[in-house]
Amino acid sequence: MAALGNRSHVAVGQWRLGDPDVLVVPDAGYDAPRIAHLLADMPVEVLGRLRSDRVMRKLVQVPWICPPQGGGEFVFGRPETWGEATVVTLTDTDRYGTATATAWDRLHPRLTRRAAWGNHEGPLPIIEGTVIRLAVAKLPSAGVNRPVWLWWSRTGAEPEDVDRCWQAFLRRFGVEHTFRLHKQTLGWTRPRLRDSDAADRSTWLVLAAHAQLRLARPLTRDLRRPWERPAEPNGLTPARVRRGFRNPRAKTGTPASAPRPTRPGPGRPAGSENRQLAARFDVGRVLDTGESYTRPAHHKVGTKPRRTR
Image 1: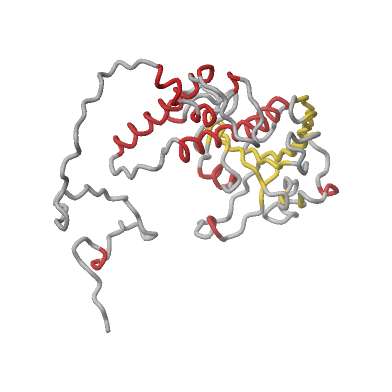
Image 2: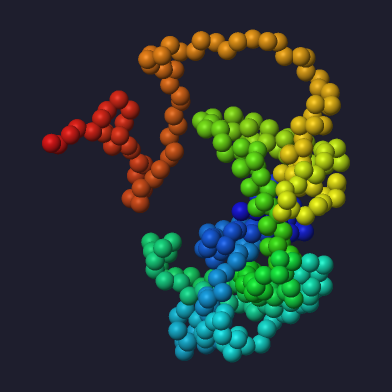
């Protein structure tokens, strides 16, 4: 998940009274209403993408007449059920043409006692929010132009709030590509570290390498693949800079002294056991009954399950 938006540059741990709420934009696989319900007591706004076949419920005008879960249905695939929109904005963009954002206020999903709500005590909550439909005139890839449905955990949206939400969602793709570069190219998740401090140091090393790739844009050549388009020297992505990074690295000085030739140590003799076992930490699992989880006897270190036959 990423905190985006022009009002959301402050992390949750650094939030102070009087600061704007933090906008959290999860991936499409997350349940945005569920996250908003769990974070209801925090200064957090949740913005998530919904499937195009979802069905929402409208505001209950007369609770003693309408069903408990809400009024009429709001079917994404049936425009006749939408009704009058609350906010409509038009924005001219360079890559997508005219972007039309249509918002409907105070819509909520119909919850059932399954999945994450299976063990919910008491009546199921009504989580109201704002549904935003984003439609653009064209796509840069000339693909199928389909609208994007978003759900925002706040109500009473103004035109500037609607524009901020869909623009923050589009900015999430840049963050996802950065995570992909850190994991696949720079090996962020490759080390198997058991210490949290070592994981923090490894993360800072990955960030330092990413910063070097950003700074080396004007120093390297564009060694592009045959299917890639040419790019300006100051517009190369970090992955394309990495292909030619070995050339400027050889010409760049370093404050470290020259390495001394040496040989690796003999290591542990073959066939001997490792007597320096790695430290293991309790994950703190708690059962539904409130009791702490304990490993079964046959799962503990030094024991093996007995064969029954």
